[in-house]
Image 1 (cartoon, helix red, strand yellow):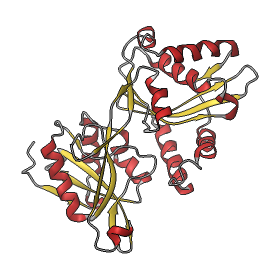
Image 2 (tube, one colour):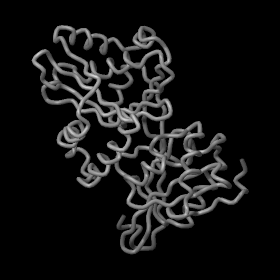
Image 3 (cartoon, helix red, strand yellow):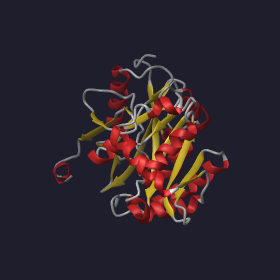
Image 4 (spheres, helix red, strand yellow):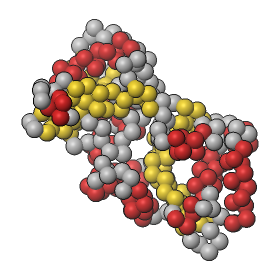
Length: 304
């Protein structure tokens, strides 16, 4: 693949969605966030950069303020960037970024884990390959995690492999919306519609933990696509926080899917306590990347 080949700017209407999704599916770094149905659901508008006949693609999720178009990261969409059938090289990244900068004078976006570049800032994400046996995976658990799991044995928790999708989404919104004020009510609504669509294709999974009195302690929405399981919306209820219900839930998911050719994507966090929580499960750090560009005219550049 050569970056000397033309990289085209296409508006959303010009994009061949079948070829686009085929590129995402055929890419070694393909993520569910890059598919057209995901972008259609959560991005305000999106155009794209496309190399040759969809050999590599980059969604351009944009909005407009003060008459200026800018690139932004849609809510509930941790990683986008360049997806390619061949390995993503630094030269390829430079070619796409240069083209993006011709059309947008401001950008604050997150690129996927294979878009490594010295000009980008690394952000933490953790993944766990589940292709080994549960006992093998558990042997990498940290001591404090094993201690917490031992404590849960006294509570007779019940792991449920089904739950009401709309209730799980609402519980997450009620529990965490104050921590994520950038995610608006309409964003949650759009995500719910997306999940309802994915549920029809069996690409949404629900898992929950109850105590012996049938009190809900923790629940999570999981997305599943192309052998990757995304921990997209885990929710620990007040009743479960002091009972280590979140530890029990993640461990139960690992046990359920162990021995399968699946990557468990924890969706990441730069918050030290959350990052340590995932490291306790023996997860591997798989960073993704933040890119920013501010070429706004004065004085907007300084106001931002």
